Length: 249
Image 1 (tube, rainbow, N blue to C red):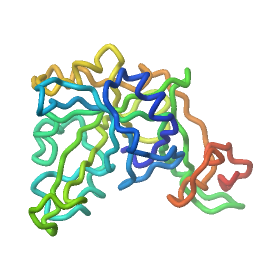
Image 2: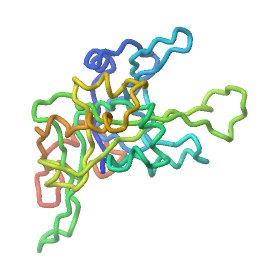
Image 3: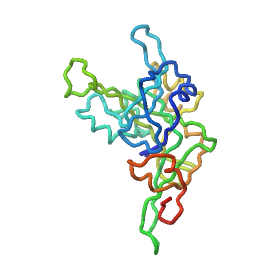
Image 4: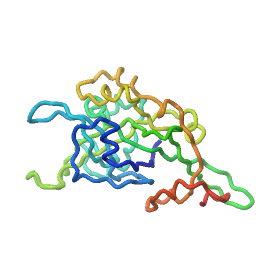
């Protein structure tokens, strides 16, 4: 799975990298070294403009944890942060989004945890690893998004009535990630961004073929401080290498 990741690039940088044509400067997502479920994250997606019918590539925040349109509660999203590539086109919660509402979720890298057996001097624990492209380039994680209307809000267009949420597509892990955890997020190569984001592209087989190992498999994995285990902790210090056998920096 992918339960935490790092996303620190500015919206200006992301707009340039992903050739974004529209984003609202009033939208804000803070840089984060510990993105957790239900946090707002930057996404890249394409939408049809109602006024002109033109398709524009947008940079916009989404809440991590997809809430299907038929869900009764926003809390549903906390359990739907990942969608398995093997079943994403068939599962009722994801199939409509997979057909029409695909996005890219920019990331510097992601965390996974490995079980460490107890020793004479330390208890059994889970050691976090930071997995990222060896060349330091941004990762374009494959995602889906949905819009959900809060049924508790009156049908009067009140602010906050609508929520935009997302999930990350995952698969069996390989290479560096596979040595740490059996699942990992998928990505989309730059040459395939347009095909993945195009809302008119709905061939499930062709879409699945666009999904790839992040950084074409050129990933590095290194142990980091167990401070990342607490979602309240944030900052570049989370990427520090542990200095003792308990995983602490």
